[in-house]
Length: 268
Image (cartoon, rainbow, N blue to C red; front, side):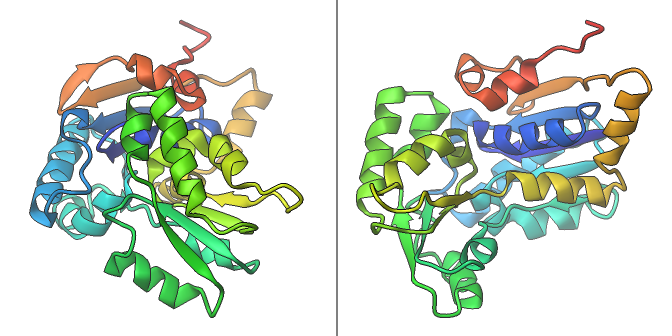
């Protein structure tokens, strides 16, 4: 079993790690384009071209499913990706978790890139699911780029700036960019007001990982069975930068998700 993931950069680590936790035996292909990130400021045609190139490179490894682990690419390129790759290769997009975030009431904040904040796509999600609950859209200037380069000082500055735009006492924060899930606890700490309940963070990694398994007819239960009969194997990892085979970068290994993916098989 093999699952591929596409993103501009290391934002795909969160979804890849979620797949690894659900199915450690799955082979993973991470196809990204860090030289061209961020994709957000680009035109729809340009975003689609870059996402399609990454998807085609991943498809050469013959995965059973492709996760578009990028909100921007899902908004702009998903129809083209599906038109080219399906039905032979199921394509799973990433949607900001607005619906589950508002399910338990508000107020709610949606942290997203400046290009996504206020976009018709995000506004439509809020209009469709908020049902009168207060939702604040928070543009996170420079945060994805800082996370991509594991620039600790820049991450702190960007998180603090976004937290300053977030209303006090929000009950939930939607992480509307896959990169943000890599620093989720830092975001939670920044928006947690003293004396207020700790906000719930809503990312998309777990949901897209589970959907990918469903699309190929796999279940996490198979892992438990493997454990019970003598242990589990850990799938292989292939990392592509614009189609070139590389190793996980030092920046990727700076995050828990990257270190989880780099864990070798016991047999190795």
